[in-house]
Image (spheres, rainbow, N blue to C red):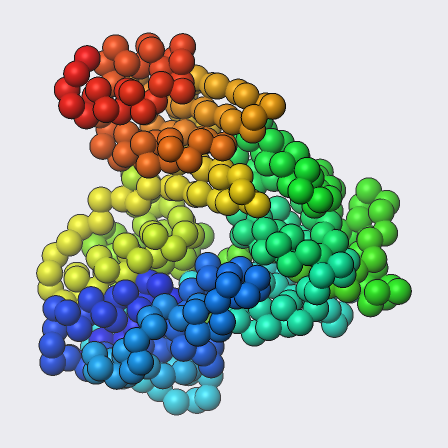
Length: 414
């Protein structure tokens, strides 16, 4: 048996290790698209602020980890999949024959059609190679512009701010992290960042990038001209599925998989950011591009590949973000459900906010700003689907009593 794992991010590494755990003798090939040891993109901000070196971003720290597990880690870029004959064609013209394939090729940054984005001094913060360039240019006091204040952009924001650059953020939405936070929370986060010396421009876009006295001049649709040594682009990502054009694999927004992480092609599975799998809250096929979900997908897919039937029950949409000391979080159906109830606690002077969303007596979604003790509780109550009983009415009046409610309901005390 030859298992081929395409993609060496968290999903791929977890899958390769799980395959070896359940099949001691099979051949396992882990194919990575970058000339680096497998690493975590989520660790790149720590590299930028010099909390870790490059090796600190590696997913596994032990020497010879893959060799010790008899996992063949190789570099290559896939260009075509021939599902019927079970062959994967690579960019260099070679082919790899497999018995079972797991596709976890992740995603790549979107490059908006903006004039001038091909200039020197403009980088995504997505790969270790990107990070090397950014670390070189993002020196203390230098003017830097960040395009995008979504989840990824806001993670990059913190590392740039901590490096002491003169930072301006340009976000096309009306608030920061609009796909994670409502207006109250997003504006609260913006005000917090501005209090820490970061300039945040919302409801505008970059229209053009030209030459400038610092190297670049970034023009916005609002008419501003921002001089910059560095422009970091964080305008979203898209799944790496181009090589599947004639493969027979069914694709919607990403690769569609069933509850066993199987694609429409026999013996071909998918996991992580590249695929649409079950969302716990909606029970629909959704793309949840976060590392914990990728790891979960990789483990479940590998178990199924080895014959250990493991249905995927659904992953919870969850995001936790730290921005220069302020923790923001959202879980599940954080914008609520039709016919559901909502409760809010707002404390603007102290940067504290809690929003709870109910479907009947069950908590189905929530947001929290500045309330770290509520993060695990929100996740626990949503995933366990506990009936809150009379505590639902209490929380409607006093959402901040959520920890009391969790303890009482979990212990059966009403």
